[in-house]
Amino acid sequence: MKDTILDYFLKYVKIDTMSMEDQNVTPSTQKQFDLANVLVNDLKELGIKNIELSKNCIVTGLLESNCNSKLHIGFLAHMDTIPGFSGTNVKPNIIKNYDGKIIKLNGIELNPNQFPFMNKLKGKTLITTDGTTVLGADDKAGIANIMAMLKYYKDHPEVKHVNIHVGFTPDEEIGEGVHAFDVKKFGCDFAYTVDGGDYNEINYENFNASSCHVKINGLDIHPGSAKGQMKNASLILMEFNSLLPVNERPEFTDGYDGFNHLCDMKGSVGEAYASYIIRNHSKELLNKQKNDFINACNFINNKYGEKTCEINIKDTYSNMFELINKDPRCIDRAKAAIKKLGFTPSVSPIRGGTDGAHLTQMGLNTPNLGTGGYNCHGPYEFACLEEMENVCNIIIEIAKENE
Image 1: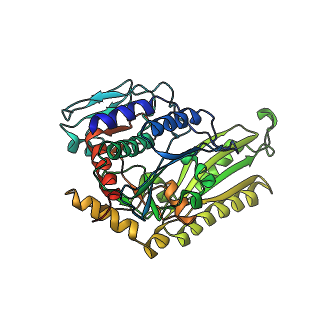
Image 2 (image 1 turned 90 degrees about the horizontal axis):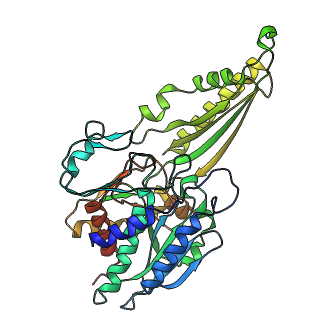
Image 3 (image 1 turned 45 degrees about the vertical axis):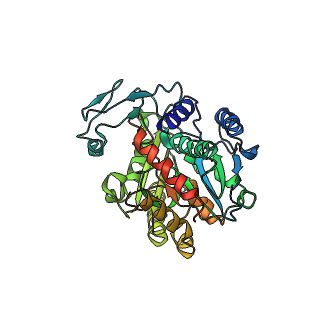
């Protein structure tokens, strides 16, 4: 099983699928079709039926039940990697029998003192970056696990299973692609995203999410005659940021704490821009955080003049907890599968979001399962092959027909 997972994983991470924000089209990058087309071919080789590749770069397929099961379960993963950090020319680095020491890469190192969870991975096989790109375990580890699960059922026709639907989506990292997903046509009773976290995790609480784009309109006057006239947009933007609660920055929060995260900023004297993401498990507290942005904007405009500060706050996804809690079959089935394999289920809130949050709001309960990947969204990203295998075995177990 490990060899199958690794073969799929190495093939997929070498395909650049970075998404891009603010493109107003799905997919946001045409190169995501490069992986989509490979997946279509791989599904055909496995004998999967009803394979479709939509104009929005969504791949779907069906492995029909071999025992006339009436249950339809979906497994999904996203194809894109994060915008803003290169996914081009990925060079996976395979470390067998990890010795528990520092792993040196190009310009960076994976240090167990910085990442204590590495200590539990001693003796296992790790796949890292070369230090210059993302790896793409988020979420090509999920894709590889799903494909290996399908291959298992192809190779073991004697094992009875339910109707297994698979879906691979674009633009998850920018919160967009799944909006084009046809839930009704997918035809599942419930589904799972296989998208990050420890192999034994089940996530069905996620942040309510908003974004805020800030523009500061300054007044660029020659500094020699600027007294009483210049409005330095970059300095005003820094002042705007200082008006937000310091203790609500991500580096000071965990668990159920919400946060305001400054993602990027740029500017000059005349104009300055910043982008934030705003997160909280509680809608009430999220609204308070959004009001902090509004109040900061009003303060700047009262101080420097009308329309000095402009903000655009947009809601992006919601907590799926309440909807899944009304019909917890997907949670009960995942917990039972994990226990049957001798693992202990770990239920924890996601400090982020997945396509599952959108799909649940669209009527398809879709909690999230782990992948065996770590340190996503940067050059420190890596995956543990043995934990990926655990995930694969878990989704195989979920898909089995209960006798």
